[in-house]
Length: 337
Image 1 (cartoon, rainbow, N blue to C red):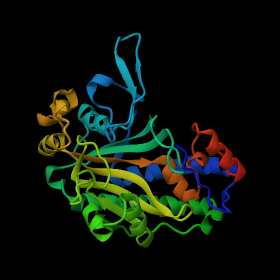
Image 2 (cartoon, helix red, strand yellow):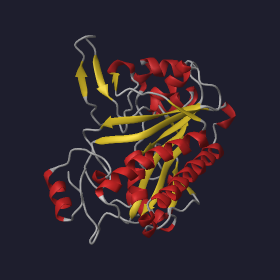
Image 3 (cartoon, rainbow, N blue to C red):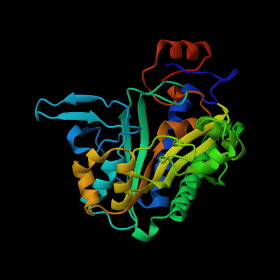
């Protein structure tokens, strides 16, 4: 389904060549800054995972992975949706010490994604995960980490504007983070949909971390879907920015303290996913074999869009678009890579 809308009068601030330069520099600068802030080390990541391991991210539980058979092994593999569970197992296998973590380029195909200005079937993000102490499994530590990520984004923005002064026409990213829970947001805007609530709040609080996503609210519905087997629904959230180009709330990162054996047990039952208990990853976690971790994904194209003032994600990544999107962008003078 096409939901592409190009703002009236929009044009890219940078030339096509400078946009390509800026994409590469944004990714390089931000990754280095993030690694320094969160004590991360870069590792290689898989593009595909064997289906029977249960390591692929199920997202909202309804999205279909790209699935295919492997002639040489006789098994089935899936193109990743994300590396939420793989990262935690990798930390254990690679012997990372307490307080250290990994970051990797995650490239995914989400075949069921609706296409609009912010969504593509191709997803590129920095997937990161770090080992934490049991006493750090709390919202204070989560919020401290959110502030560090926002500072890394603001630092990258400052460097990019020094390198490309024409970007100074854009409003600067607010480094001050407002924290609110999904229940508080529902209480504030009971008659609005989840997305409408986000837009209403983030318009007034342009850097927001929306906490506690996944569990049903008092209305009986969750704010948004979240798989039961990686984030602890009581200690997670989405980092949202106000996008001045598109005039909407804009998710750049989803992250959280990960489930331990107790919260995994509870969330699997609540989500009706008890069949996953027999999968290798889940058995290891329920058996106390994996370390306590926190982690998340930070959208690479999303961050580039925000810092470069782009109106469509196709300006900062190469993907496949429907004919209507191609037509609308061509008529508006928006170059799709």
